[in-house]
Image (tube, rainbow, N blue to C red):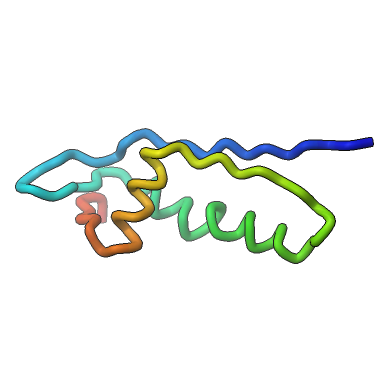
Length: 77
């Protein structure tokens, strides 16, 4: 039997454009990035015979890049 695992990762835009930058007002992108978005591929990398697909929507990738490159200013802390 063949089984396909497809994870569709999406987040709404949790920011507002303000003063030439982005202000993040909810913690969900960074919270998931520190947990599921990292852990799931890491765990699956230990199993060579398991094939999966992760679909990340563009607005989520954009927000993850803001955090990774230090452009995210957070107002939720």
